[in-house]
Amino acid sequence: MYKVYEPFTAEECLKYLRKSRSDDPNLTVEEVLNNHDLKLNEFSDKYLGGRVPESQTYREVASSETIDDRPEMVRLLKAIESPKIKAVLVK
Image (cartoon, rainbow, N blue to C red):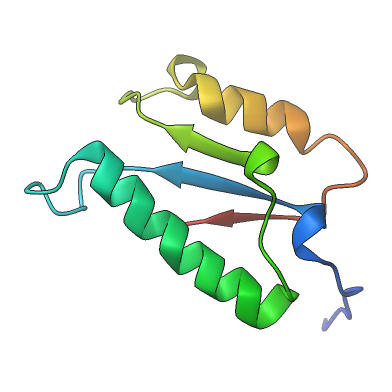
């Protein structure tokens, strides 16, 4: 069944940046995260009318098989419990 969602703004989003195994191994973690940040900023500028605030951006540099070992993901999961948050942008 099709559901109509209420529009939301960039301020109602969180942004999660993480280097994965599929990213270019020749790039540093910082370069990968910066590239992901740029792409998500382009997306949010185009579709959400602005950028997700830096205070709502989570950058994961830890590598792990479990969520418990990813501190930024744990913080993000706690943050999405807020009714103010409508979406999470991830690359």
